[in-house]
Image (tube, rainbow, N blue to C red; front, side, top):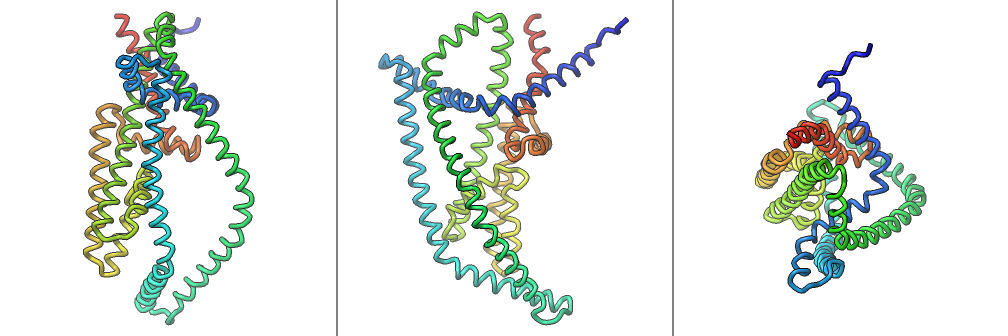
Length: 351
């Protein structure tokens, strides 16, 4: 006679099933539905302005959605245009001054090698010759592999551009259709047998997903702004390019702002630029404590996931899904946790 399962065993089996379902969904289903998930997020973003236009001017919701998407696209396009102009201008200036920077790096490397030779009692110029040989070998390897790499991946790049363009069109059209058919969709859910479960899960997952995406976007944007301002105050000509790059790097917690700032501070100290080192260290500390504060306030309060849990989830996601796992790992953990609590919440609702 089979022994009945106790509550712990039932919960363990349920969690294993949820975990397997999330993995299969991320691995096989997500690539198929991601354009429509993006469309849903876009429709959610313009929902309130569209409703306002509908009530104020009696515009049909699809028409209001088209107007809001045009306004949003125009605003983003103008912002990107000015940003790209400044980025291109600074990149051109950087390329013009690159030989001078290379000479400075060469002088700095020679100085470091000379000091190490004296410290280790090595033959004069032995280290710098080794460094030059390694640099020449690395440069030759890059030159030999660069052209084949470009030729092999040019077709893939063209396919990627076409796919992104097609997905963008699908996302825009789908967001307009979702905006117009949302009321009908909600009516079908309200008539569904699983109305309470769908409502509860969608509310919880929507709250968690919204808080996670907003917190990461806000942190990344503020970090980039602080870096740009800090580097500009220190007199760096390419503050915009470097600051935005550091802000994007900060989205990857395994790297973070410290990957750039800590070596930069150390080099500045050894170069005798103590004021610059202090300014860079201050900028780094502001970015660091900003992330800690924002994660604790936004992610901790609304999501309840600690930095250690985030890091573990990202590592698991990286191993399972590759680079995209940096995002899918924490998202999957949150979904598993929320769905794992769903039976208890449903039981409480029934009581």
